[in-house]
Image (cartoon, rainbow, N blue to C red; front, side):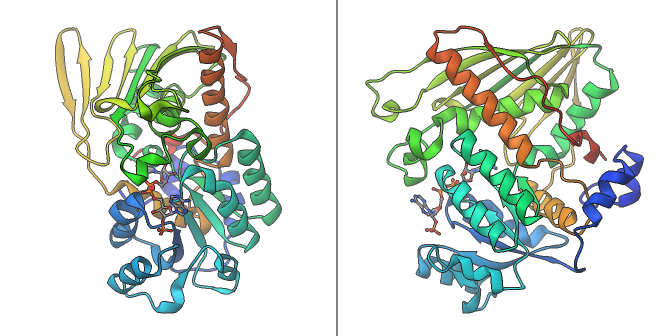
Length: 383
Ligand code: NDP
């Protein structure tokens, strides 16, 4: 299964008929699913808008932007009429636009909750970028707004749908590494305060957590989907140079350790002042999987280590954003289960809060609620 996800395949892979029929109840129409992209910044222009060209059944049908010239240019490049351009003031008028079924929120983190809730109230399904919000209260409000509106809320965790990460999940689940003992995630990059796209990320109010909310979240989420269990305790420590103007309100380097009920430990690290890396490793009793890089937009590599020998596992590279948008379209049409719902995003937010609490308490152990259970194992999308 590459980009196509068949109902038969999903059932064969263990997705219950109940999950699919629940998804099916929301099916109202057939054909391609229209998406409005909200916020035409770096990610939207660099990955998302171009990604529609590689989609099977997600279509770009509207743009929402505070800059009409930019929106007009992108609209004409993608053959959208002027009536398909909205701004933040007239955003609620999307309710009357039948060409929009999904609203993809690609705004700075502090704006996710407001526009997600407005889109849900307008009767649209929402695909929202990570992290889903900047506070637990906002995340909970987004989930309850989706329930009230009877609409889907999916968090844009692209790695849940990406072949390398899916292959790693499958190998861990199959037991071929032996019992997983240790997961190591390293999600770091350099930040640049003069770049407007980083300026809000370096502001605690707007980002909800600097490097941790931007990059570390891949490690928090990754440890959970690799092990398919929830941590019960975390200890964390930070090293932040407060004389660096980038780190007035957010932490820089954070290292944490999650303890899982199986006995596995996940060590994670994140920083906004380090050479770019998005890598992870799973060490089992007998074999070791290394993804380095493991979460870039492309050019990732997966290796299996046994003893001293290393074998590269071939991975079919895809447009990760196209795949994720197609998955959302399939969810809307009742053809796929909701793998990364709001609850997944909320669980990561709880864990990031626990990390920051441990940092504030100088590395004290903080209990985390290990009772959260995801409804669908992301490994379901394995080919
Ligand atoms: P940018 O800052 O580059 O773009 C955000 C856009 O939001 C702006 O260009 C602007 O678009 C709009 N906007 C509206 N109000 C504001 C405001 N007050 N301040 C700043 N921007 C505003 O951010 P990114 O594109 O890098 O990130 C957007 C989201 O995507 C974030 O949540 C981020 O975490 C997530 N992301 C996810 C990635 C992934 O791999 N899944 C990778 C990168 C980012 P306009 O001018 O059109 O109104």
